[in-house]
Image (cartoon, rainbow, N blue to C red; front, side, top):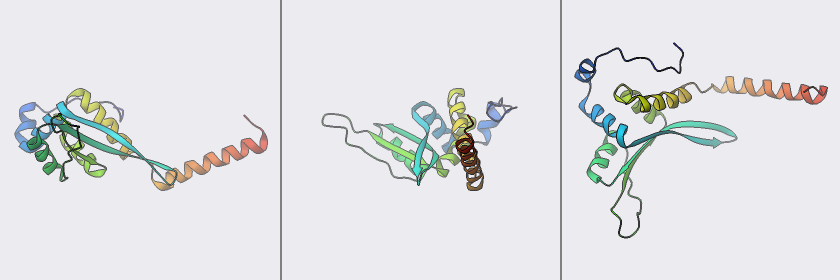
Length: 152
């Protein structure tokens, strides 16, 4: 099985949910329907980093406060403009988001599972500093050779 294929679930739902923490399954269900999973791109010193990100937003303050407590973050209430219902948001990024993605993955729908796996593979398979430096140096040598020798 390749690293980016989706493995079949072998445990029955009864076994899965019998061992599950109710807070985790509640959060998984809510995020499956209302959450967003993606990578944030960050450019630091010419290097590009990608970090997992989870965000959920809705007009139910008590629900978002509960999600924020589970995430260990504060919730946000951006200005929605006059005459609009208040909108609340909770979000996490980086290693914390990756940990949450891994914990809720067994409970997610097929479409969300594929997206989460893509994000986690991208995050955990990033090259180490030495690997990145080695690839960069090989590319520099190849370009120098091409420039000096006129090869295409």
